[in-house]
Image (cartoon, rainbow, N blue to C red; front, side, top):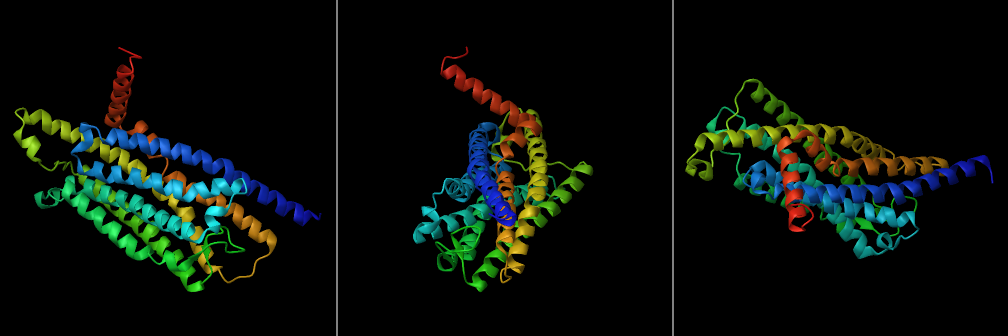
Length: 327
């Protein structure tokens, strides 16, 4: 075996190990974190806050996104490729992956918009920070995502040769459409919106304009001053954890966008076996980075949000008391 063939074999082995162990770690890491997000955000402390609705849906979508994208990579690391060789399963998996990626990404956009609305000086803008607005926004994103990615059932095929993943598209027009739809709709446009509304929210904070939107519950409470202070504290905590999450998401989305752009530009370029092996290795690493971005939210929230951390501790203690482990 020549030196070139040895190098290709080594690169393919490393890629297989990344798919086998790296993807499995991200599945466990991300699933655990997002499930804990789900539990914490269901607490009454956060339940009535519109921003929580966005983060709740982002966590649920992230779980489905992680499993639909990484399980096949774990299986391929063990030489099991039947999910990508089965035409219906190939198409359904890719459809779910793209829809959940869109909802997870755009839910963060909705959350940053909500933080901007609730910190705005205008009462009309503050009223847009509501659970009703959140539900309308998420339904609109779901419908738009379905319309954009329903073409997966036509474009994608199983057992496609000479591509990083067996479930792929052979038609240049389909590949161009999917690459640029993901670059623009799932990466670039959400990133721009998150950056813009993040900056606008910081501007509002610097102006010391922090007015939580009034709710019927808060107006009916006898101790309205304490409730108002409590709502402001929740808003501050959500702003902090969301800002950190958005910064991490923006940083980890950049390599994915670059890889998608490169894939689109070089789709018709002839490549050697060594170049294909190198690109497959890079692709495996970038795929993990993309999923890590949607796997670490709970861990960021724990370190950056005191109310999130306190709520999580309280729920753990309650569960341990129910199990009679502590008193």
